[in-house]
Length: 130
Image (cartoon, rainbow, N blue to C red; front, side, top):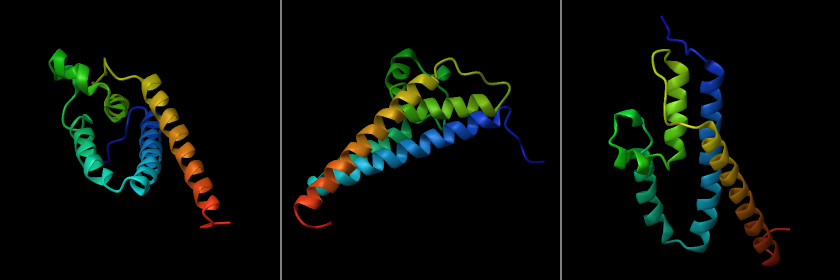
């Protein structure tokens, strides 16, 4: 028997938010890597920290307050907790916020598009594209 989420629409929304944020951050990192090639070393470290703090292997309700305050800055953690809340009827998250995830996604999209526009204009000025 295939397990079905309790609220599948919420799970899909969380997946879309996560994918959109990943795409937007990818656009930003692409632009920054073009300007500063050495930044690759830095974002590999940052991505590992984001993965560790994303809540895939724990829920924030189990963490000490001092650690919880740090990991709750990660919007991927919020999306993970909200997905877990929507999938399992016995789990209810106390810490995750749709508003926080939405704000982070919106900010990432705006910054990603702004970086893409700046890069396109720079390339047009240099004659690399029409």
